[in-house]
Length: 146
Image (cartoon, rainbow, N blue to C red; front, side):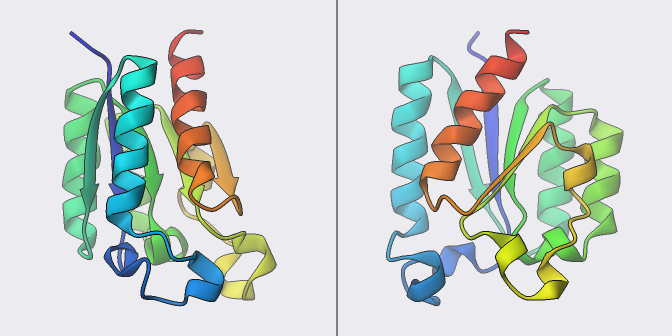
């Protein structure tokens, strides 16, 4: 059975390509999914790609990933800065996780500088746009092989 990688995307990422293209670019979430699926094929892993505007969905998917012993690449979006529930779910599920952001959250508004996810992540990739997703997938594969 192939290693699974859950790619979880938080609120408003379904609006990529329309929402603030000066910050997030013109690439859509469907474009990112296609890129990740192609990279997953190259890496020999199964991609489970999901997005929700609802915190509870993300919590449930993190728990599901833990049950399946899947790796997790997450862009929690705004929940990065607000969700203790995501923090607790990651801790409880004991998943190997990499956090990714399209923009450099540290170069933006001060409220975006804190992440409830980062302390549990094996690494954080931000500011590289859609390439950050590919970097995150490769990092997860390397982590899993160690």
